[in-house]
Image (cartoon, rainbow, N blue to C red):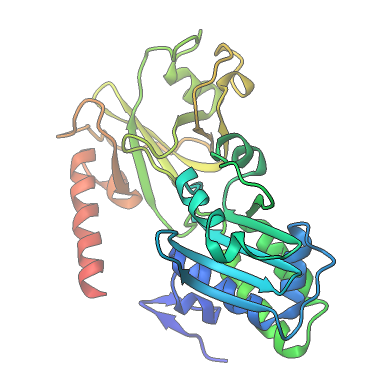
Length: 331
């Protein structure tokens, strides 16, 4: 079988031709739910709707509009059996309370006589994070549930063994697609997120930011606020004393609200939502890489090779921007 390349990127699943945005994810999952009864059954079981009847009356709708109540991503309905609204999110983003209230208040949904009614949020979030941070509107008769993308992936894998040959092909395509994007970390990306590191201690801490990185191989920052990333980077670089010090691969990450759970030297407190990165061994440039023209606390993105070959971080940043503009122009 010949390889298929799109912009020199290998395509292993037909769903990859859609793209990797939220709407693309929605359409891929919606298509699979409508065309694989075993996948739909696995999905329903996962959200606690296990003994439902799936038949010719079951309907899967994509992007249904209702006046003043927004547009839903996916609706799954089967007479008086179940009515489910699915909201698909990329990364650790969650729908607002207002958005959820609109869905729960839709006339078609609230007036339905289905015995099982739910709004299901698909995201990268853990159940613990979802339960703590989603602003749940009050509503009688319907459930508000979360389902991480990795569980949707497992649903597709479990359903494969109970499927027809045609369904198996479809679910294999879906599994490849979800596996490539569900971690929300682009494993092929060589972009480095470069931050300024301080000798100061975090509030309530007996250890400095620099020591947390150098001694514990940990780093943390707020999630998606004030210019901080809402998705973990592959690499992170640290600068202080006027130059780049080290670059680290982000081996894994956690989400915390209380830093004391992970770093005993910081007193227990509720900080809100933070990413905590577990860092790999340091990569050190073989020559001095000065900070250059970057604000004192400025944060920038640089391609790894540019960062290791340039004389300053700002020069590597400029090279990176030029390359990315060129790629966008070619596409």
